[in-house]
Length: 58
Image (cartoon, rainbow, N blue to C red; front, side, top):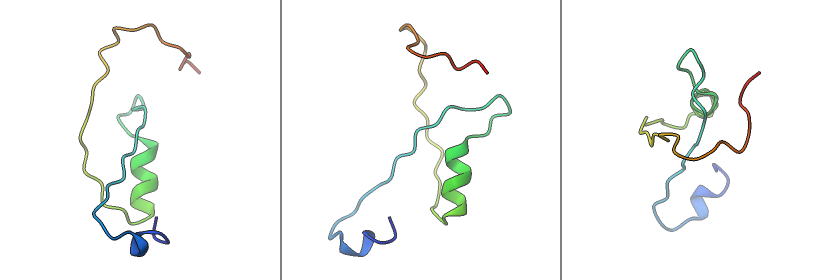
């Protein structure tokens, strides 16, 4: 992102999608903060109306 940003002659956003862990943390937020990317927590909540395609159990 740092490499290409100066080449983009427009405004752009970066969206991170992550599963929220049981302790309310998200791996994507930690990685973005380590990279110096500002994080704004906005959410789209999946209400679970569909059938899961994968198991998230450990």
